Image 1 (tube, chains in turn yellow, green):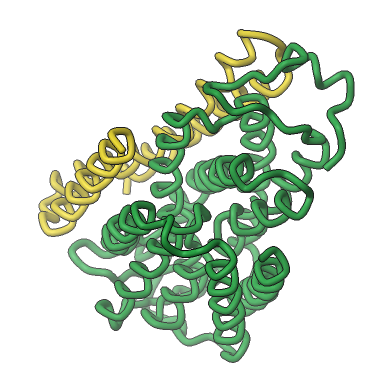
Image 2 (cartoon, chains in turn green, purple):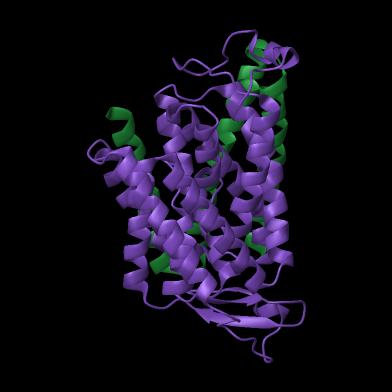
Length: 88
Length: 299
């Protein structure tokens, strides 16, 4: 459970950072606003992937191999999907 | 949606601030922020993702589907992130269930995206509308609580179980309910259908995933909604990567939607923890009716 608490804290930091960047992206003019907004979008894309990777590592660590493998499978599906979409 | 007020135009230097070649449409930022806030709140409360509400609202307001779809996904991703800390601390998400079902959804979503040109948008809207109304009926039909509290369980038992698709969730401060996901193969078919529809339409399949998890797999609605909020965040992340590569994300509008949806998602997750399951189910059912009607009108 401690790992879930750490993950919750990490998501809290991501949430606060995304919100600050979102406000900057929405209301700061010019290139600076674009950079803030771009970072916000990057956090929104990265956070769930980090969460899945974190859980996969955690499950592997505690010996829950079946679900660790499923987590890895999902990460591979997501990576494949991203590659196919970019290539297509 | 009306025109941008003069004060807001400065945020985009009178021109569009974007990552690619999409020209910004005139979107009233106040209306956009309110719509994103409300839809993200409802999306996180019912585990639907805000896009299924936000995208039809934007399209009905005159925004093109090409612009509305990425904003909808931003709303879903932001709502998912906003709900994450509270749901993780409350240990209501069943991550093993979310990841297991997300594999089926993601593969189907990819297939859907690849064949998305075959089915007309009008036919798809009718299909989605009927699915939403059917799910609303299924949710509304059931009364009471399927999974009852076990007096032997305490706060330390709350969470998902290692090595299985089961767990315990808190019904109140003193009542704790065990659950076990059932009919996994049928549930996976439902999740694949949700993914296929998401890939075909560009909206998250949360409005199918949550009813499938509750009505087919017999997972309590609070756990189902929280788990779906987690899994739709994964799908939307990948879809956003694609939209970014295609240059379809207008950063200033996306940032505004993200800010509002982060607030809405936090509120929705808080409400979900406070409301009793029958209330959550009623809210979910009511929202599904609205979604169904919106989709049928939109076509």
